[in-house]
Image (tube, rainbow, N blue to C red; front, side):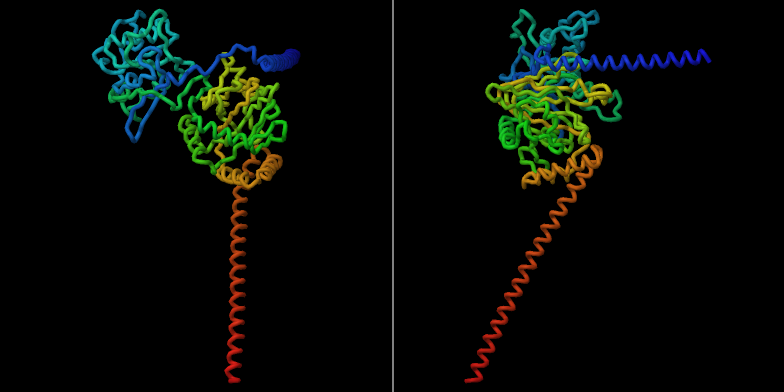
Length: 521
């Protein structure tokens, strides 16, 4: 009995100690997070964006039926974006031997072993900064030139950031003028796409030609096309997502929609949440749904194309205005995109700058180091609430600290819009009814009904009942319109019949008067 009681008591003490340690860790985490919130301006940030439009290039292959394209970064040596005649080439990609430009001893080679095959084509080489024998991109370009290459494609091997690319620099003390052909970099994931371009399901290894790469690829300047910049495993930027005209049009719509966060603007239906953390700001939802303008449809189709998320999962734009009144600062305290109160699971948040000026977005609890993203007009900041490999961004308990973000204080008036990508698609009924009621001034009624549904049936079932209501309401409206039309038609027919009777009565009176006169005659 005594050993049993001793073990039981020991287990009890261990459980108490474990509970105490968990509470202590949680308390330390809260204190640390609070300290971060209080000193956002003092954190050591990784600053983005780093890529510019001057380095944007596109690798493309295929025909008019199916065209595939990859994002590439132009090196600072060789032809530049403003030298399109020299930069743009079309040739065959050939895997270099050795791919790294170094021999088995790690020494740089002077010429590639397959120089004859490389001659007149695009040499494909790899760069892994983690390798001890890595050589610079400029040195690779010199090797490719000695081998007769018409262009050089360098693959960035980074196991931690599979979509990362950057602009290759010239070696210290070198001018780079001796490189007279284009040199570009693509990411590891892009290289996987390139080397499976001609591989089909079930194809045997012996049937794969040119390591799975197409026989011809085209390199040209990106111009104002959207291009990507990898920031973190759960975050990336899309440059040039919106044109200047689209940004200005959204600003005009936002200006007529937003209201101060000091007013009652926190509506569940509008997804204008966390307004208590918005200081000196205005916010509002641009309800469009299925009533979008051609410009709005074009933006959603572009988003669907570049992100891969189906447009049925997008919410409408929520507009945020940092109202830079004289002597005041506008900012948004740290928060995360939690919409569990309305039964919505947010997969991804897409925030788009509509101005070149304004507050940067900061992620103070990013994995490796805090991240700061400076504004750039038309650029989108895409961050996932769920890890792309299928795991939650953070622990199961508590908020997703890695996705916590804030807007730094600013005295400038600036505009932003954001869209949420939801785990479940929005119903067509809601996309049809909500904007329609907004157009005729019935938005307040729908907001009230939505919050009643949430309160009555909970966050999990309330939205479903509201969607059913959205189906019922149009039917009632159609029925009411139909009934009104029928009533008007009946009134018209009864009125016409009355007029006919009146005409017939008058005609009879005239006829009887004529007959009486004829009898007298």
